[in-house]
Length: 146
Image (cartoon, rainbow, N blue to C red; front, side, top):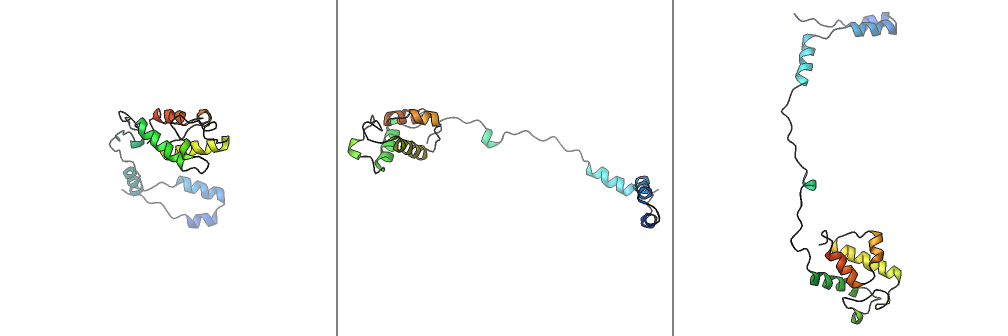
């Protein structure tokens, strides 16, 4: 047997707020309301645990970048700088001594190398890169470089 809730709007007008609240709390939901609540609490199958693609296992390529390819690309980056004389470029050139770059220019070179190889070199390590050979070695030992 279904019971329904009596309309209480008339009672609210006649009573104060306290009495109206007690009338609301005493009202009992109908069977159809109870059935709809039961329907909303469905038990579903357990979800499968999957590893997101970005957290999956990644394997570095067997050899990484070839050192000769790294050298060529670093030299190309330096050739694009106006302050660098291309005739003085060698794989062992120092930024300050051989190429005549100041510290700000050396920072710009390291930033250009980061952009070329799509890597980010931490500031402490970037300060230690003072020659083309050191830049090449750093990139060769960085698996993220490409």
